[in-house]
Image (cartoon, rainbow, N blue to C red; front, side, top):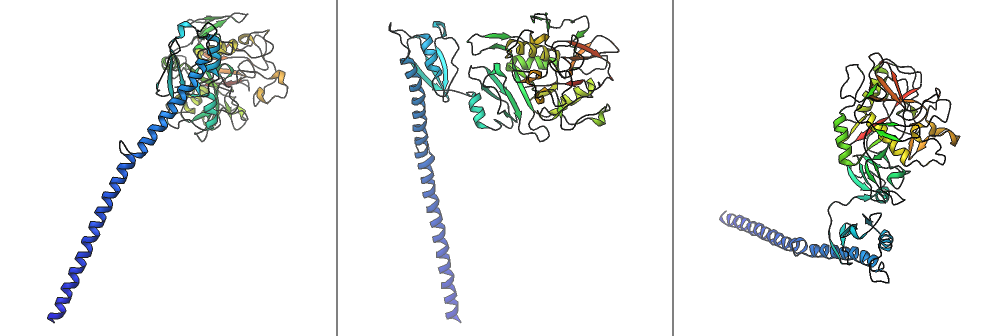
Length: 447
């Protein structure tokens, strides 16, 4: 019995030694792992040095691109030729921020190349530093082919250095223009019921174009002369009736927050307006109560949203997007008139005999899916990627007519009643009026 007890004791002792050895082995392995990780990721680690070398190479490459452009821009007099410098910089791959006209006053000239801020002095000296948040170009955003940021607005620039702010959940549409003056189109990509809806950017402030001439558009309410000349009206009552009120005692729907809209537009340099009249997947009939309202979209193949009262149009517009970092609303008078100024200024029609603000309909019958579906190209109404502001159906806005029994204001042209019905026109209606297929509405977005 004693002998067996001794054996058990010896066996237990051997097990203890094995456990200690295992612990020591693990500790050694942890130490070695720590040394390896430090070697790889520490301040002077291999990965850190590799990243530093990579960044340095990228920085030098960006600087070299600009240096080559500058070196090729000197004239025979030994001075920088500004016109050649502009042309040479425009050829630099990945460059953003080249002004339309480079003059002596442009220096020091700052441009962004591949994520770096490059500073060019008047004497040709070049310095470089890491830039902050550099906007993508339209081309880069299109190449992404997807939402730029699911949760936040993203700022991008077009090829003329105009700024565009993209709302969360949107992407650049495949058929968008390459620059602001042609109509930048964004498309809803992330919201299930409204996916595919499209809006066009209306720029405010100084706008650069292909002609290298900067043009200015101010956010305002306008009246338009017969020759198209716009006159800013601000908060004036237009035609003795029409005004943009913060709230109305007449019962019509006003803007969600007109002051917030103005502030946003001035801060971000623009806003969005529906590419088409409001649409819905199902063709409407004469339904007037709120229970019969369809989900609204802005899709080219859906039906135009008609048979709708002004207050219903406002409700649908404001509820199209909620809980986002941007706001949807029924078009207000500032948004409508400023869009007309933009379209008229950059009118890409061949025949401009009649200015767009005074243009009447081209077709004499309602297009249930908009004039974008009409086969006769001469009857289509499109400027800068925006359809049907001059034709098809009157469109409700948040403007108030100073008439107690007809306070609701519609704008634009109409495909059937063509006498004096044009893009910048005004028409007043009662609260209960839902039209006979001749009224729709247009939705705006602002960030």
